[in-house]
Amino acid sequence: MAVEFHITLPTRARRRRTFPEHLTDPARPVPGHAPADPYDHIAQVARAAELAGLSGAVVPFDPDGEESFIVAGGVLRRSRYLRVVAEFHPAIATPVYAAKLSVSLARFSGDRLDWKLGDLDPLTARAHGDFLDGPERHRRAAEFLTIAKGVWSQSGFTYEGRYFQVLEGGFASVLDDGVPSPLGGRPFPRVHLAGTSPEELDLSAEHADVHLFDPWDDIESAVERLPGLKYGVRLRVAAREDAAEARGLEGDLVGSYDNVAAGIREFVSRGITIFHLDASPHLEETYRIGEHLLPLLTKESADVH
Image (cartoon, rainbow, N blue to C red):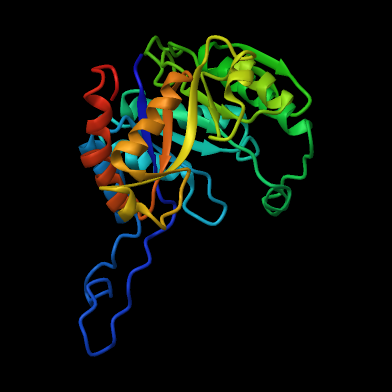
């Protein structure tokens, strides 16, 4: 079975050390020169993931960080092979606009864009102008995905829902003048969903391609309700040469490279084939994962990448 490893990207510029005035700070803007690119650190992590042989990168939705779709677009344009998972919530835009934005990103990147629909805690949701509560949030997400998939794959699409309505919408394959439409004919992004509540599992059963778990979830019980999907896990990892060097680090899997690799193999034996890995500091740990951890896994099977 093919196994995918996706690194979680930072959503905020890395804080640089400030030097005393009498020393030269390479991050300080020089008169007459452009300031340092705040996106540069994110791009470096994505480049490290590609060089390290990881399958993709995850751009989390961060209410106080860079916008995930913008970061995803930048990473897709600067990479050749990475799949990029953009996380967002259904109140970000209408499903039609989200689909239109995504089809352009898909065209410009060889269809390497995935979606991850997340949710917001109540206080953050209200701060973003979203006052929907409880199970209604899952019903809205279902409508959002139904409409997004509908307009993506057909023209003349109509949907009358509780939260969204569309009348005769959709992306045509061919325009009125016979020219192929730039919006038609692309595969829909893979949809990553998460959660273990009945509502979340029902949403995944209807709409997900990948269902994500946390490492402490009862994965086996949930999988019984989600036949035919790919299953993933979100893991904070911290791996070092030996257990003594790893002592004191924090994460869901912490230890020597061999021990962390064994932990990942255990998840694979439980049906997990997609790993959203999170490690900090991002750039250094991405190279570390690629140089020391992945070889222990890829040598086990040619299908693991």
